Length: 415
Image (cartoon, rainbow, N blue to C red; front, side):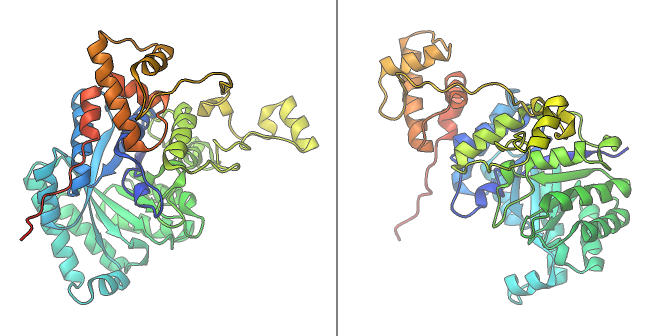
Protein backbone atom coordinates (compact mmCIF):
# COMPACT_ATOMS: atom_id res chain seq x y z
CA UNK A 1 0.00 0.00 0.00
CA UNK A 2 1.41 3.43 -0.87
CA UNK A 3 2.11 5.81 2.02
CA UNK A 4 2.01 9.53 2.76
CA UNK A 5 5.31 11.18 3.69
CA UNK A 6 5.95 14.70 4.96
CA UNK A 7 8.43 17.02 3.24
CA UNK A 8 8.71 20.20 5.27
CA UNK A 9 9.66 23.34 3.35
CA UNK A 10 9.91 25.84 6.22
CA UNK A 11 13.60 26.45 5.51
CA UNK A 12 12.95 27.17 1.84
CA UNK A 13 9.40 28.39 1.21
CA UNK A 14 8.75 29.51 4.78
CA UNK A 15 11.77 31.79 4.95
CA UNK A 16 10.76 33.39 1.65
CA UNK A 17 7.79 34.92 3.46
CA UNK A 18 7.81 38.71 3.30
CA UNK A 19 8.86 40.49 6.52
CA UNK A 20 10.07 37.43 8.43
CA UNK A 21 13.06 35.10 8.29
CA UNK A 22 15.38 32.79 10.18
CA UNK A 23 19.06 32.99 11.03
CA UNK A 24 21.11 30.05 9.75
CA UNK A 25 21.46 28.68 13.29
CA UNK A 26 17.68 28.80 13.66
CA UNK A 27 17.24 27.00 10.34
CA UNK A 28 19.58 24.31 11.66
CA UNK A 29 17.51 23.93 14.83
CA UNK A 30 14.40 23.50 12.68
CA UNK A 31 16.16 20.74 10.71
CA UNK A 32 17.13 18.97 13.94
CA UNK A 33 13.61 19.21 15.35
CA UNK A 34 12.08 17.98 12.09
CA UNK A 35 14.45 15.01 12.25
CA UNK A 36 13.42 14.29 15.84
CA UNK A 37 9.79 14.47 14.72
CA UNK A 38 10.38 11.80 12.07
CA UNK A 39 9.72 14.07 9.09
CA UNK A 40 10.92 12.39 5.90
CA UNK A 41 12.62 15.38 4.28
CA UNK A 42 13.49 19.03 4.88
CA UNK A 43 13.85 21.29 1.89
CA UNK A 44 16.55 23.18 3.68
CA UNK A 45 17.70 25.95 1.36
CA UNK A 46 19.15 27.24 -1.88
CA UNK A 47 22.54 25.66 -2.67
CA UNK A 48 23.20 28.07 -5.56
CA UNK A 49 22.80 31.12 -3.27
CA UNK A 50 26.03 32.46 -1.77
CA UNK A 51 24.80 33.23 1.74
CA UNK A 52 23.33 29.72 2.11
CA UNK A 53 26.49 27.78 1.21
CA UNK A 54 28.20 27.55 4.62
CA UNK A 55 24.95 26.68 6.37
CA UNK A 56 24.08 24.02 3.78
CA UNK A 57 27.49 22.37 3.87
CA UNK A 58 27.57 22.45 7.68
CA UNK A 59 24.15 20.77 7.88
CA UNK A 60 25.29 18.15 5.39
CA UNK A 61 28.24 17.52 7.72
CA UNK A 62 25.69 16.87 10.47
CA UNK A 63 24.18 14.26 8.12
CA UNK A 64 27.57 12.58 7.72
CA UNK A 65 28.05 12.66 11.51
CA UNK A 66 24.71 10.90 12.00
CA UNK A 67 23.18 13.89 13.83
CA UNK A 68 20.70 14.61 11.03
CA UNK A 69 19.52 11.12 10.15
CA UNK A 70 17.36 9.61 8.77
CA UNK A 71 15.93 12.90 7.49
CA UNK A 72 16.81 13.82 3.89
CA UNK A 73 18.06 17.37 3.30
CA UNK A 74 17.13 18.60 -0.16
CA UNK A 75 18.08 21.80 -1.93
CA UNK A 76 15.90 23.85 -4.26
CA UNK A 77 16.89 25.42 -7.55
CA UNK A 78 15.39 26.58 -10.80
CA UNK A 79 15.20 24.16 -13.72
CA UNK A 80 18.34 25.62 -15.22
CA UNK A 81 21.54 23.70 -15.83
CA UNK A 82 23.56 26.63 -14.45
CA UNK A 83 21.64 26.50 -11.15
CA UNK A 84 22.28 22.78 -10.76
CA UNK A 85 25.91 23.21 -11.79
CA UNK A 86 26.50 26.00 -9.26
CA UNK A 87 24.71 24.04 -6.53
CA UNK A 88 27.04 21.09 -7.07
CA UNK A 89 30.10 23.32 -7.29
CA UNK A 90 29.41 25.20 -4.05
CA UNK A 91 27.90 22.46 -1.87
CA UNK A 92 27.88 18.71 -1.28
CA UNK A 93 24.10 18.50 -1.70
CA UNK A 94 22.88 15.14 -3.02
CA UNK A 95 19.12 15.71 -3.18
CA UNK A 96 17.40 18.43 -5.21
CA UNK A 97 14.01 19.78 -6.13
CA UNK A 98 14.09 21.52 -9.50
CA UNK A 99 11.34 24.01 -10.29
CA UNK A 100 9.80 25.72 -13.31
CA UNK A 101 6.44 27.34 -14.16
CA UNK A 102 3.97 25.31 -16.21
CA UNK A 103 0.78 27.38 -16.51
CA UNK A 104 0.25 29.45 -19.65
CA UNK A 105 -0.41 32.53 -17.57
CA UNK A 106 3.03 32.23 -15.94
CA UNK A 107 4.85 31.14 -19.08
CA UNK A 108 3.55 34.24 -20.84
CA UNK A 109 3.58 36.59 -17.87
CA UNK A 110 6.96 35.69 -16.39
CA UNK A 111 9.01 34.89 -19.47
CA UNK A 112 7.48 37.63 -21.64
CA UNK A 113 7.81 35.66 -24.88
CA UNK A 114 11.29 34.31 -24.18
CA UNK A 115 9.97 30.78 -23.54
CA UNK A 116 7.07 28.70 -24.82
CA UNK A 117 5.67 25.37 -23.65
CA UNK A 118 8.33 23.35 -25.47
CA UNK A 119 11.11 25.49 -24.00
CA UNK A 120 9.78 24.68 -20.52
CA UNK A 121 9.93 20.96 -21.26
CA UNK A 122 13.43 21.28 -22.69
CA UNK A 123 14.69 23.28 -19.73
CA UNK A 124 13.30 20.74 -17.27
CA UNK A 125 14.77 17.83 -19.22
CA UNK A 126 18.21 19.43 -19.46
CA UNK A 127 18.34 20.26 -15.75
CA UNK A 128 17.21 16.74 -14.81
CA UNK A 129 19.77 15.14 -17.11
CA UNK A 130 22.59 17.27 -15.74
CA UNK A 131 21.63 16.56 -12.13
CA UNK A 132 21.37 12.82 -12.75
CA UNK A 133 24.66 12.69 -14.67
CA UNK A 134 26.46 14.52 -11.87
CA UNK A 135 25.51 12.34 -8.94
CA UNK A 136 22.30 13.74 -7.50
CA UNK A 137 20.62 10.85 -5.64
CA UNK A 138 16.99 11.96 -5.58
CA UNK A 139 15.39 14.58 -7.79
CA UNK A 140 11.94 16.09 -7.60
CA UNK A 141 10.64 18.12 -10.52
CA UNK A 142 8.34 20.95 -9.47
CA UNK A 143 5.45 22.07 -11.65
CA UNK A 144 4.94 25.64 -10.44
CA UNK A 145 1.34 26.86 -10.77
CA UNK A 146 0.19 23.35 -11.70
CA UNK A 147 -3.33 24.12 -10.51
CA UNK A 148 -3.76 26.69 -13.32
CA UNK A 149 -1.98 24.64 -15.98
CA UNK A 150 -3.64 22.89 -18.90
CA UNK A 151 -4.13 19.28 -17.80
CA UNK A 152 -2.86 17.66 -20.99
CA UNK A 153 0.27 19.79 -20.87
CA UNK A 154 0.78 19.00 -17.18
CA UNK A 155 0.67 15.28 -17.99
CA UNK A 156 3.18 15.84 -20.81
CA UNK A 157 5.40 17.68 -18.32
CA UNK A 158 5.11 14.75 -15.90
CA UNK A 159 6.05 12.25 -18.59
CA UNK A 160 9.15 14.32 -19.42
CA UNK A 161 10.00 14.25 -15.72
CA UNK A 162 9.72 10.47 -15.66
CA UNK A 163 11.71 9.99 -18.87
CA UNK A 164 14.58 12.12 -17.61
CA UNK A 165 14.93 10.49 -14.22
CA UNK A 166 12.81 12.47 -11.77
CA UNK A 167 11.92 10.49 -8.65
CA UNK A 168 8.85 12.59 -7.87
CA UNK A 169 6.63 15.22 -9.45
CA UNK A 170 5.63 18.19 -7.33
CA UNK A 171 2.15 19.54 -8.02
CA UNK A 172 2.28 23.16 -6.85
CA UNK A 173 -0.96 24.95 -6.05
CA UNK A 174 1.13 28.10 -6.05
CA UNK A 175 -1.73 30.57 -5.65
CA UNK A 176 -3.98 28.41 -3.50
CA UNK A 177 -6.38 28.21 -6.44
CA UNK A 178 -7.48 24.59 -6.03
CA UNK A 179 -10.21 23.25 -3.79
CA UNK A 180 -10.16 19.69 -2.39
CA UNK A 181 -12.43 18.44 -5.16
CA UNK A 182 -10.47 19.91 -8.06
CA UNK A 183 -7.07 18.90 -6.72
CA UNK A 184 -8.22 15.33 -6.12
CA UNK A 185 -9.44 15.01 -9.69
CA UNK A 186 -6.33 16.58 -11.24
CA UNK A 187 -3.74 14.75 -9.17
CA UNK A 188 -5.42 11.38 -9.56
CA UNK A 189 -5.34 11.76 -13.34
CA UNK A 190 -1.76 13.04 -13.28
CA UNK A 191 -0.60 10.14 -11.10
CA UNK A 192 -2.46 7.58 -13.18
CA UNK A 193 -0.94 8.84 -16.42
CA UNK A 194 2.64 9.24 -15.16
CA UNK A 195 2.84 6.63 -12.38
CA UNK A 196 5.23 8.96 -10.58
CA UNK A 197 5.00 9.61 -6.84
CA UNK A 198 3.35 12.99 -6.32
CA UNK A 199 4.36 15.83 -4.01
CA UNK A 200 1.50 18.09 -3.04
CA UNK A 201 2.45 21.73 -2.41
CA UNK A 202 -0.46 23.93 -1.41
CA UNK A 203 -0.76 27.57 -0.42
CA UNK A 204 -3.46 28.98 1.82
CA UNK A 205 -4.82 31.94 -0.17
CA UNK A 206 -8.35 30.54 0.09
CA UNK A 207 -7.84 28.94 3.50
CA UNK A 208 -7.77 25.40 2.10
CA UNK A 209 -4.07 24.47 2.09
CA UNK A 210 -4.39 21.58 4.54
CA UNK A 211 -7.64 20.29 3.02
CA UNK A 212 -6.21 20.43 -0.50
CA UNK A 213 -2.98 18.76 0.63
CA UNK A 214 -4.84 15.84 2.16
CA UNK A 215 -7.18 15.50 -0.82
CA UNK A 216 -4.27 15.64 -3.25
CA UNK A 217 -2.32 13.04 -1.31
CA UNK A 218 -5.36 10.75 -1.18
CA UNK A 219 -5.67 11.09 -4.97
CA UNK A 220 -2.09 9.93 -5.45
CA UNK A 221 -2.66 7.00 -3.09
CA UNK A 222 -5.82 6.03 -4.97
CA UNK A 223 -3.81 6.09 -8.21
CA UNK A 224 -1.37 3.61 -6.68
CA UNK A 225 1.65 5.84 -5.96
CA UNK A 226 3.24 7.30 -2.84
CA UNK A 227 2.29 10.84 -1.82
CA UNK A 228 4.47 13.51 -0.27
CA UNK A 229 2.86 16.52 1.40
CA UNK A 230 4.77 19.79 1.65
CA UNK A 231 4.28 21.61 4.95
CA UNK A 232 5.64 24.56 6.90
CA UNK A 233 5.87 24.77 10.69
CA UNK A 234 2.98 26.89 12.02
CA UNK A 235 1.73 27.38 8.46
CA UNK A 236 4.20 30.12 7.57
CA UNK A 237 4.79 30.80 3.90
CA UNK A 238 4.35 33.32 1.15
CA UNK A 239 1.23 35.50 1.39
CA UNK A 240 -1.35 33.56 3.45
CA UNK A 241 1.07 30.70 4.12
CA UNK A 242 1.53 27.01 3.36
CA UNK A 243 -0.09 23.89 4.77
CA UNK A 244 0.65 23.77 8.50
CA UNK A 245 2.86 20.85 9.58
CA UNK A 246 0.93 19.83 12.69
CA UNK A 247 -2.53 20.40 11.16
CA UNK A 248 -1.60 18.25 8.16
CA UNK A 249 -0.29 15.39 10.29
CA UNK A 250 -3.43 15.49 12.42
CA UNK A 251 -5.68 15.62 9.35
CA UNK A 252 -4.03 12.55 7.84
CA UNK A 253 -3.93 10.59 11.09
CA UNK A 254 -7.14 11.66 12.87
CA UNK A 255 -9.81 12.60 10.33
CA UNK A 256 -12.79 10.28 9.83
CA UNK A 257 -11.97 9.03 6.34
CA UNK A 258 -8.16 9.03 6.57
CA UNK A 259 -7.48 7.65 10.06
CA UNK A 260 -8.67 4.07 9.36
CA UNK A 261 -6.42 3.83 6.30
CA UNK A 262 -3.21 4.27 8.33
CA UNK A 263 -1.44 6.02 5.46
CA UNK A 264 0.94 8.27 7.39
CA UNK A 265 4.66 7.50 7.50
CA UNK A 266 5.16 5.48 10.69
CA UNK A 267 8.27 7.45 11.67
CA UNK A 268 6.23 10.58 12.46
CA UNK A 269 6.41 11.39 16.19
CA UNK A 270 3.55 13.76 16.96
CA UNK A 271 4.81 14.23 20.53
CA UNK A 272 7.39 16.69 19.14
CA UNK A 273 4.69 19.00 17.78
CA UNK A 274 4.58 21.31 20.81
CA UNK A 275 8.37 21.70 20.86
CA UNK A 276 8.83 22.59 17.20
CA UNK A 277 5.77 24.85 17.08
CA UNK A 278 6.94 26.91 20.06
CA UNK A 279 10.50 27.15 18.79
CA UNK A 280 9.45 28.26 15.30
CA UNK A 281 7.14 30.89 16.77
CA UNK A 282 10.03 32.27 18.81
CA UNK A 283 12.53 32.12 15.96
CA UNK A 284 10.20 33.77 13.43
CA UNK A 285 8.92 36.25 15.99
CA UNK A 286 5.33 35.21 15.21
CA UNK A 287 3.13 34.37 18.23
CA UNK A 288 1.12 31.17 17.97
CA UNK A 289 -2.53 31.98 17.30
CA UNK A 290 -4.78 31.23 20.28
CA UNK A 291 -6.89 28.90 18.12
CA UNK A 292 -4.04 27.27 16.19
CA UNK A 293 -4.65 23.58 15.60
CA UNK A 294 -3.09 21.37 18.25
CA UNK A 295 -0.70 23.89 19.79
CA UNK A 296 -2.73 27.08 20.27
CA UNK A 297 -3.54 28.09 23.85
CA UNK A 298 -7.23 27.33 23.29
CA UNK A 299 -6.77 24.04 21.44
CA UNK A 300 -7.72 22.15 24.62
CA UNK A 301 -9.49 24.92 26.56
CA UNK A 302 -13.14 24.65 27.63
CA UNK A 303 -15.34 27.32 29.22
CA UNK A 304 -18.92 26.73 28.10
CA UNK A 305 -20.77 24.93 30.88
CA UNK A 306 -21.91 22.05 28.68
CA UNK A 307 -18.45 21.62 27.14
CA UNK A 308 -16.56 21.85 30.43
CA UNK A 309 -18.91 19.34 32.06
CA UNK A 310 -18.56 16.94 29.15
CA UNK A 311 -14.77 17.27 28.94
CA UNK A 312 -14.36 16.66 32.67
CA UNK A 313 -16.51 13.53 32.50
CA UNK A 314 -14.65 12.17 29.47
CA UNK A 315 -12.18 14.25 27.44
CA UNK A 316 -13.27 12.47 24.26
CA UNK A 317 -16.63 14.18 24.51
CA UNK A 318 -15.08 17.43 23.33
CA UNK A 319 -11.49 16.60 22.32
CA UNK A 320 -10.75 14.70 19.13
CA UNK A 321 -7.23 13.76 20.27
CA UNK A 322 -5.29 13.91 23.52
CA UNK A 323 -3.07 16.90 24.26
CA UNK A 324 -0.35 14.56 25.52
CA UNK A 325 -0.05 13.15 21.99
CA UNK A 326 1.34 16.52 20.91
CA UNK A 327 3.88 16.73 23.72
CA UNK A 328 1.74 19.06 25.82
CA UNK A 329 0.83 18.84 29.48
CA UNK A 330 4.05 19.67 31.27
CA UNK A 331 3.97 23.00 33.18
CA UNK A 332 6.09 25.82 31.79
CA UNK A 333 8.24 27.20 34.59
CA UNK A 334 9.01 30.91 34.55
CA UNK A 335 11.79 32.16 36.81
CA UNK A 336 10.64 35.40 38.42
CA UNK A 337 13.76 35.87 40.54
CA UNK A 338 17.36 36.58 39.59
CA UNK A 339 18.22 35.68 36.00
CA UNK A 340 21.67 35.36 34.50
CA UNK A 341 21.84 35.20 30.72
CA UNK A 342 24.65 35.06 28.21
CA UNK A 343 24.94 36.70 24.81
CA UNK A 344 27.02 39.02 22.68
CA UNK A 345 28.24 41.02 25.69
CA UNK A 346 28.32 38.14 28.18
CA UNK A 347 31.32 37.36 30.38
CA UNK A 348 32.81 34.07 31.50
CA UNK A 349 31.23 34.01 34.97
CA UNK A 350 27.67 34.55 33.73
CA UNK A 351 28.33 32.13 30.87
CA UNK A 352 29.49 29.46 33.33
CA UNK A 353 26.37 29.97 35.43
CA UNK A 354 24.10 29.56 32.42
CA UNK A 355 25.78 26.34 31.31
CA UNK A 356 25.96 24.97 34.87
CA UNK A 357 22.17 25.33 35.03
CA UNK A 358 21.98 23.41 31.74
CA UNK A 359 24.22 20.72 33.30
CA UNK A 360 26.78 21.18 30.52
CA UNK A 361 30.39 20.68 31.57
CA UNK A 362 33.56 21.79 29.78
CA UNK A 363 36.87 19.96 29.71
CA UNK A 364 38.85 23.05 30.61
CA UNK A 365 38.79 26.86 30.66
CA UNK A 366 40.03 27.06 27.07
CA UNK A 367 37.03 25.10 25.78
CA UNK A 368 34.67 27.22 27.89
CA UNK A 369 36.12 30.45 26.48
CA UNK A 370 35.81 29.14 22.91
CA UNK A 371 32.14 28.26 23.41
CA UNK A 372 31.53 31.63 25.10
CA UNK A 373 32.87 33.36 22.01
CA UNK A 374 30.60 31.26 19.81
CA UNK A 375 27.61 32.07 22.03
CA UNK A 376 28.41 35.77 21.67
CA UNK A 377 28.51 35.48 17.89
CA UNK A 378 25.37 33.35 17.87
CA UNK A 379 23.52 36.10 19.75
CA UNK A 380 24.72 38.62 17.15
CA UNK A 381 23.66 36.13 14.47
CA UNK A 382 20.10 35.54 15.73
CA UNK A 383 19.54 38.95 17.36
CA UNK A 384 17.52 37.16 20.05
CA UNK A 385 18.31 35.68 23.47
CA UNK A 386 19.62 32.18 22.87
CA UNK A 387 17.33 29.30 23.81
CA UNK A 388 18.46 26.36 25.95
CA UNK A 389 18.17 24.18 22.84
CA UNK A 390 20.53 26.47 20.92
CA UNK A 391 22.98 26.81 23.83
CA UNK A 392 23.30 23.04 24.16
CA UNK A 393 23.84 22.68 20.41
CA UNK A 394 26.57 25.36 20.43
CA UNK A 395 28.42 23.57 23.23
CA UNK A 396 28.10 20.14 21.61
CA UNK A 397 29.02 21.07 18.02
CA UNK A 398 31.18 24.21 18.16
CA UNK A 399 33.00 23.60 14.87
CA UNK A 400 29.73 23.08 13.01
CA UNK A 401 28.20 26.18 14.61
CA UNK A 402 31.14 28.28 13.45
CA UNK A 403 30.56 27.10 9.87
CA UNK A 404 26.80 27.67 10.08
CA UNK A 405 27.33 31.29 11.08
CA UNK A 406 30.00 32.01 8.46
CA UNK A 407 28.54 34.29 5.81
CA UNK A 408 30.98 36.00 3.47
CA UNK A 409 29.73 38.26 0.67
CA UNK A 410 31.23 37.55 -2.75
CA UNK A 411 34.21 39.63 -3.82
CA UNK A 412 33.58 41.77 -6.87
CA UNK A 413 36.24 43.42 -9.01
CA UNK A 414 36.00 47.18 -8.74
CA UNK A 415 36.57 47.39 -12.49
